[in-house]
Length: 249
Length: 249
DNA sequence: TAAGCCGTTCGACCATGTTGGATGGAAACG
DNA sequence: CGTTTCCATCCAACATGGTCGAACGGCTTA
Image 1: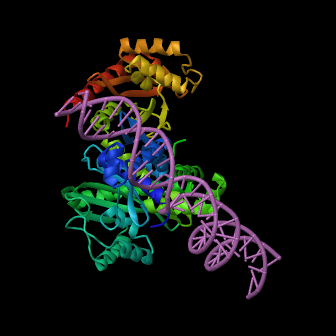
Image 2 (image 1 turned 180 degrees about the vertical axis):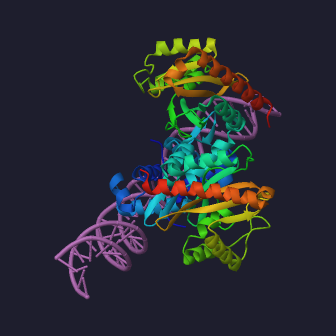
Image 3 (image 1 turned 30 degrees about the horizontal axis):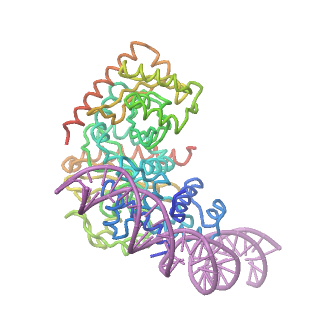
């Protein structure tokens, strides 16, 4: 546990405020098992940073997080060039279109737009999942060097998310080989029961920048011709994104 | 300046990382005028919290902000009940539909969906503006008790955002009076040149929960019949939201 | 009126944040 | 290929400032 106890504790306070959905010094103190006076000064200080507000007695997380989060998202080049194409993709297919990126060996949902047919999942921007547990992540994994893949698996293991999640390194590597040759990844029920996903990696200058994917109810993805149609759209969109990424401002 | 220098500094480091779009210890140290070793340990600690990552040499803000921000947004009841109606509103009108809330006397953009006709402004979720500088904010102000309005004006002043921004308390109060009797607020070029906005406050149990608004190019809002049409849609949407807010889960 | 609860303030102790300097590895240069 | 430079990281002594117990005061409850 590297230095700065106070800083780490400050973020613990933030976590507690999230968990309790707002709290006073006493509650925070109990939850963290520290004196009230200590909790109090943390809350005061966090308030002075703007990341915490004191709304009618209880301290709450402010919208500074939302602001910073959005700004980070909007500054991301992959988001900038993907946002519009992804919107079009969702409009054309009617399904849920998503863009994810890799961060620290994990999969981060950067943006998703729902089409008219798509069901609302709890997919919020910033949601972090394992890479191996769905098509979008596997599309990325398929483009990473083998030793990075191994390193990630070593570090995180392969704990199952649903009953369909890959839990064995051999299977994963074989699957990634297939993804590479097919140029796309699919999954059924791997991340969420009842949902299937098709994903393609975004590669520019031999570097994976992320992946885009379409998620829809399992029975729809199982229809082969429908799947082919989605895949086509997906590839067109990917093409657009790649070009914009290379030559766009 | 309330206590916890280290905590406040940690957030200064975060600001610097944002400003520099990622940096090493040396850059941070220079920017903040502190020893490198100090900058280093802050970065290490922030990294251990997950809010900062060390991507290929430079420390950067992670997507933990995006994650936390989204979760805060999604937990907000006003967002939960407004999201779908707002989407419909944007689809029907083709314009940019927005929902804002008040926090600490300021206006926070919680969510916006663009219609097909709408132009992309830099309106990101979490963006914070004064309340008095556009219709969405004035709609909220119009429903706050007079002394809160005065308190806010006292605290923040009325610095102009564009040439059309209200800069005088008398004018503001008179305008709010009008908003109250009309039931909606309008502005031309007050927040952004060339854009006009119509907004209505969301009131449940005599409490303003926020406001929804439509923004479009000034010339379009100036058309009286078009404005009336937008206003109608806006009011319908508001009705839906209010009911959902009261009786929804 | 008394008792309990909670947010806030105060002051002293010493843990811990702070600092300059040392180390080592990688890149830039001759 | 050796040298220099730069920068991230580590270290150890110092004193700042984080920590904690206790006390104050406002608010609600019995």
